Length: 115
Image 1 (cartoon, helix red, strand yellow):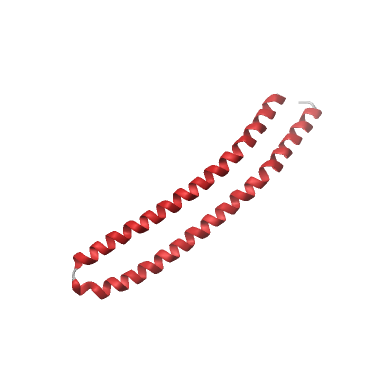
Image 2: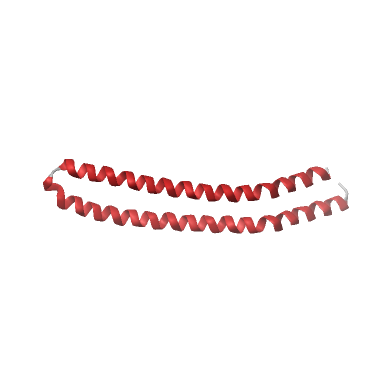
């Protein structure tokens, strides 16, 4: 390829880097935010589990059937809470990816047009 074409390709690639940079920063920010949220949730769940374990151990003499229903009901709430967090985070990532995709497609098209 000619030197002029190489220069233009580098310019287009630099433009892409500049256009994508805010999205990359936003993606990293979301990743850190999601990690922090998961960490806080995990810590809350561990604390809750310890409290429930103490509570269950104090109630053992009253019968295992009542404890089982309490465990099963709270277990479902925790699962629902985790599922909602996962869905919310996936939606955020999908929206960000939808913003990045047109920029990448435009870059690909520019490179194809040069060839």
